[in-house]
Image (cartoon, rainbow, N blue to C red):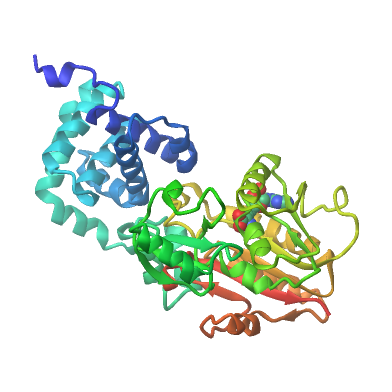
Length: 448
Ligand SMILES: C[S@@+](CC[C@H](N)C(=O)[O-])C[C@H]1O[C@@H](n2cnc3c(N)ncnc32)[C@H](O)[C@@H]1O
């Protein structure tokens, strides 16, 4: 008897790691669970184990739709039924051969060994045959599926089509950017350091900076590091926030004494940035429908030494929580498909459905109407989303604008003032990957 195949793998062994990755991948692909949540629920014996499981899961999900198409070719019949966990383990195996530098013999052996861990010991020979055929016929197998751009870039067809419609000149670049490993952006807390001064701290600590962004506080690191290793992180010197997300507070441009509403605030990245930029605000009210998520806002405020009024409430139904005093500035960072941040959350490609877009756009329209009703005359509302799709962005703003008299859309003027490249259309849409930023959308609307 072959001892290696029959022995149950020890916790933390290579086969155990593949089996755990397969369980997580199956839970995303078949149960629709969030990858971040599943990873957060795991416990790891070492940083190395954590790194390997994370990498296997994120890359397998990032490339799932392409790997699944290759797997279908490798099956003796395309409709051959595999259990979710075995299919996911095969995906994890193919992922290692195509997207990691794990030596192929180790990738195949440990993935085959993991069949026992997932309760499918009889599938060892089958999986071994599939992975070895992938090694032999890699070129032709890939070429056959890559004729289709949606599959080549591992996007659901509805999303690839929507991106092509909304970004006719840039969709190919966006599809590729969505599969990149996300860059690591910092927001330097102006109350402690300028970006230049903090950059020197980073350099002294041996942390390389690649570039600065459009927001004067933003710095892009050469590579990701563990957040607690950032100089002064626990003392509130710096936060982790994408370069595009850092534009919100600058577009809002709150002035001393003003009353500001952050209408969908959690986890509070933009709330804190608004407060860092304007120490003399009258008041900042941070509302979120989730009391649980508001705890994250509280944590971030505490770490950064900032204060805001936190309200658990529905921004689309302010009657229960609003005192009727209008706000001078409102940031409305709507819940959305998050199709602009796929490189950070690749499971979006598997979890979102085209039908979701209609529901989301309706909810966004309701939130916009409600927020507008709380804006003071002469005030500014910034509508923001991390969606890449017109239906959640300019279409929502234009639809609302049609019913309003005197509303001024001033996005392009404000964008020019903060140094963004010239653009056209309603609002300002940032394509994922532009300037190494996430995909984002902003519209600045002013009330007469
Ligand atoms: C895109 S996130 C906001 C991110 C946040 N602005 C930041 O920068 O950290 C959207 C938030 O809207 C909240 N939300 C969803 N529907 C809401 C509603 N009707 N009223 C208030 N908050 C809502 C969600 O709980 C979620 O925290």
